[in-house]
Image 1: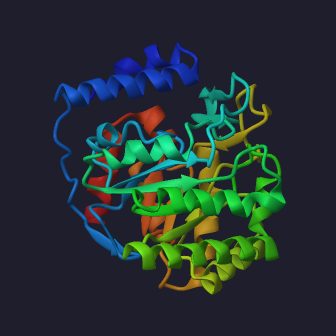
Image 2: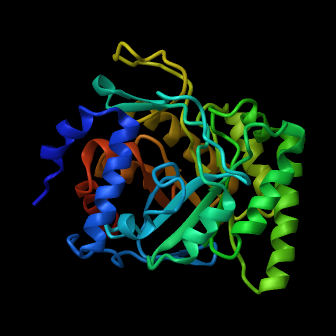
Image 3: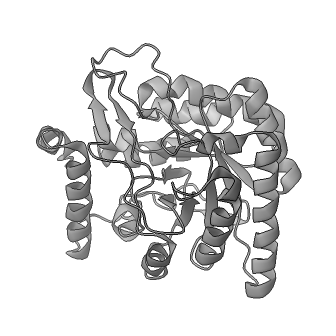
Length: 338
């Protein structure tokens, strides 16, 4: 029985960030007490991409579990992969609260979190203790007080610290909530960062005999030429895949009175932009490079549209907030039968 429609009004009566934390703690408790059903369809559609075997094609996007504390509990919902983070080298508190807003009329969220997290050292300790059998990726970024010219050092240090416990690493250069971060998506800045990370990964592989794929996460707000340039750079530098897309700063077609509040928008208004970005990147990279499609997936039809656009894997976030855990089972089953 799906209880989420009954619980959602209670959760939505609470401040969004508090409701999110309460949901995660409750899910963790239910998991530890063995109250959650086994993840039906968990292994229903296995696919191997970038050398990793994903039990199914649906994942949880970064931001839901920032510190890797709840991977096992979230995994019990049936996700084939979970991406945690964004994780930075040093702990940081993020932007001032309130920093998450629900746009109920648009079934959307605006967040301006600013990468609050416990830092790579604590996150690594959480991840080595996980029992989740699916794929666990780690999304990494730079600390807010690090100048853009010194950002590469932060990313390299994060990769070194998390390499041993991540199944893949996602390079977040596209969040709109860290000043100037999105400038890293362009030209020589991007190629320099990606080359440095690929070289570091090669050194770590020689030392550990463990290959960890690298994915780069791009913005929904890039032009077609910028998306193609970023994809070409990813190929030339030896990056394994692309995640498209992060949240948007655009506010086209919104009805909610709070639509112009600053931050990254997620939910249905993002879907068309994300689908377009996936199509553009797929046209650039051909069939060889894996693409994870994310942004505005709220239904099985949206997930199928992502696959049709060219995404090999699909992630959700806001859909889970508005639709609840039943959406996971529905999408996993639908993608397996598509």
